[in-house]
Image (spheres, rainbow, N blue to C red):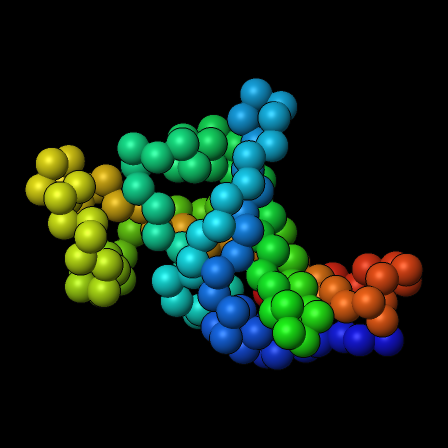
Length: 141
């Protein structure tokens, strides 16, 4: 059976940083791609913006799951937990330096419009066809 350690999962996410994030609003699921800005010891760190629906959805219901995929290797890693917003000016500076397309939003709404979050109390599951029909073994992140 295929398994991954916590460290292997974090390395996988760093190598495959675009994940499909699922949120819920009014009992209805919403899914979109989101690129992890960094992968830290506590898991992937994401940047979103206050005017976007995803921020409003996570603020109202922090339960979240993100699926990262490596199609060539046939591996998916799902990370589930609760969105925990992070206030860190140094990280925010790094985001604004790397993501210059956000300057107009900061000019219009201020730095507080840029939101950072990690998935707190996260559990991850590595899926392949080899373990498709066996019970899931979740790994604490």
